Image 1: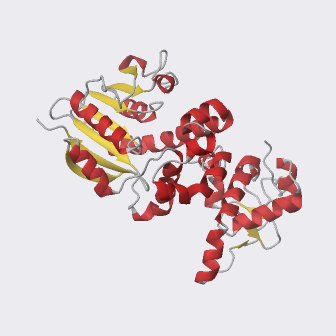
Image 2: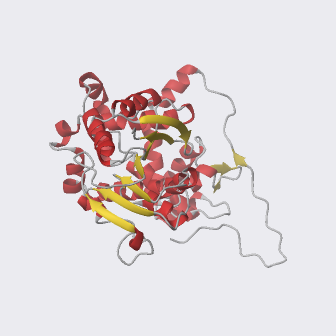
Length: 364
């Protein structure tokens, strides 16, 4: 896609024209009645983010201000509706409108670019996939019954539906999870001290981005990646045959809820203890059964009582209730699960703005 620039090419001696100041919108906090109205229209905001992501408006907007007409040409849209979309988004800090009616990037709009290293484009698409618009109106039913309404809506479980009936949504899910995992993997690698560790096991580790980041940072460490066969087959190319980390990696197809057939000094369990309670208990007990006394187990999760990220994590918590009947943890609920599995809990440390690491040890 061609990036729009409304500024003519400058000669080396030319001075760039000043950019008109963005319209930041009203500075005051709306009164409660207006705020509630805004929240009730929250679907419009989510739909606007999705529309901008699908149209790739952020990718089309360059460093110079661009008019709605210029952007519309780039993304194959109509200028006036696109202006309305951008104006709505700018109310929330996604793009900004200048005094002359052009639009410029903001910190948030840049995150919708696919080439941004911290891109949230696929996460934004995933959270607004077509099935979500059918599921959210049934939240009261899920709250009343305490379980997923997905089978009632679609006649099958969530992941079966994705892979059998919603191939585009499955692709978006995979891209979103891959992007998110790759971004947080470096944070995990920076956090964990691997002194004395020879073998790391990434349990339910998806494509193994965390494991790959750890192996790259610690060239003497070996690793195991355990996940379902279909997932393990698509492991990070760095870990597979021919990859630079393949000779230090064992890819193990399997279900950690059934068994953990790997021996390691350090077990990592990241963002998988959000299924039903029984699956969580089985996974933790399987890790404890497989591990040697003194082995480390690091559990990494989002927490719904983590104040800076609560709006995000509580929303994910409700989505889990709808689609799989799962739940995000509070710090106390996760401490309880870990203790029930027989693990000795040490420090709880932030990984980044929305993840926490629970450092545990298998007792002697």
